Image (tube, rainbow, N blue to C red; front, side):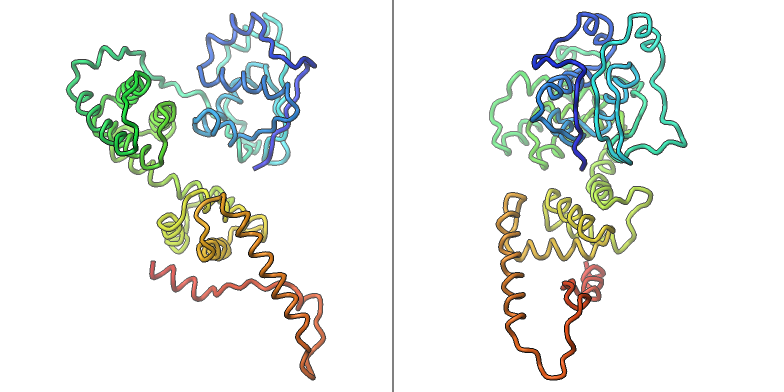
Length: 359
């Protein structure tokens, strides 16, 4: 994913917020949007900081659409300008606050929709701010809610199983937020916690982000909707990493993806897809499959294992190349050409299709 270069019109290394930003811009912006803007201010003052949209997602534990909405919002308010390089964001420039009269006009305008004939960058989809926002509530409202009490018991069981043995006030508040956000549906709230624990996501802020994402982005209204949204996401992420966004996976591709998900972590799958695109510039599932199988044979279980596995792979290739160069050519053997010296892909496509069909 392309790294975004940041710059500011100010040469100062400290972060200075005008009073007008707090008075005029901050009250109408969501908390997540404000956090994104403040971090852009901090990063722009430090030349050593490079970031991508994915970095912002990981930092604030929110969805990609939340980051996209935040950037689109501040751009519409005239506080940042975005420079694009093809389909990706190349730079974000922090601008001086617009004059008061202009800012009032801009603030009263609705967030513009994406222009149909202008391509939307792959890592930034300009979306309107969701109209549906969580209603304010007090945790005290849930004290007499029997469904919430039962939900707390189930959540405590899951958390204890994940070695979180203390129900802190922060955890209690987050569970109450999720329960209320998910329409006080006990089964739906329980599924959310089960989903997060399975992903080893133990931060309460992440639970809140998932609940918000399900409701505002995925249109989740019941347990069936949540299961569909959570189960389809890995497939969507893999297709996106392969550069495929305009169609669903073909049956053979879906079987391959399902087998990957059963056998490998998502971080390794996405890395294999990324290496496939960089190596052959096309979304060839068989190529990515050969990468994953090689890693599995080498004992790779996480991204941290890859540097050593890559070194071993390159050393083995070098040994084979050296051994081949020392082997005398048989009489009548054609002289190697540039084409015949190209490395051939050691992959049996027929075997791959057979294995996929069996899976």
